[in-house]
Image 1 (cartoon, rainbow, N blue to C red):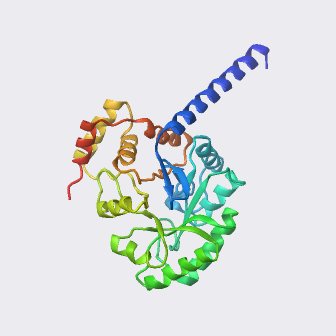
Image 2: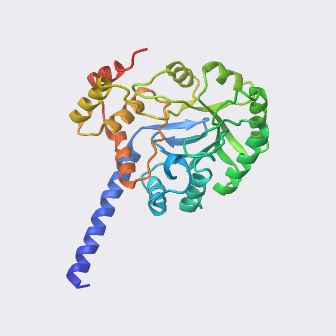
Image 3: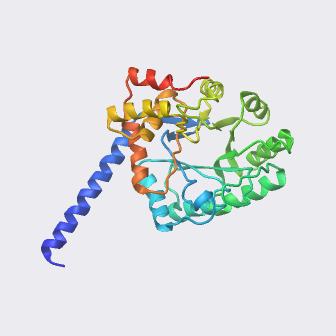
Length: 309
């Protein structure tokens, strides 16, 4: 390589690094932070590690090296909350997180989940039995190379298993030191209150978006009680009318529909933690820019009107 070409390459790499540093700095300047359980302060724009697996959240990713790059880039961008589950792959997501990031940077919070079986692509049978939860909790600790899991979330309450049995197991897992904090997923206010008889609920992960606000009551309850609300499936866009509103506002700000949907969630309630998932570094960086969008009162009025009870 000639000196001129070598210099050009060095300058290009330097420019790219400065661009990445600037992006990280901008994200870290945002005021979007939340303290999980009053102990673990995280940036509210996190990362969901479901998509670093194969099709149907089954098996190995099509591009393992890109999955590793995505995980490393999340930390570079200031993300310090990563959400995963033993059922993603199964086991693939947790294993790749450890491969990419262990030993973990100080302050990184990893939340994982248990309570589902995998029988094939897009197949998610429930199993919140004590036997199954014990097995998958120990497996998660081993795969993630952790002595204690910061946030362990029950993926679903299993109607085949008395909730009291499941909750008692989680209580004992916390007491034994395997789990620091406990969260729930797809639950009602009544179910949260029942679980609180056994342990402190620090997070709830329910399906929720600007156009699917079925769990608004749960969000309000969580906000009033300092419980993190972690929406999954942040953009439903179930009708052309809904999509048109999002497109209009996205065009106004020069952003994508997905970025506007994420931004609305951040501005909607201070206890919302986002975990958008992707297997692409480019898409990851686009998601992170959602924290810099400022929706005005007219934008919020239009977006709030999308959902009809």
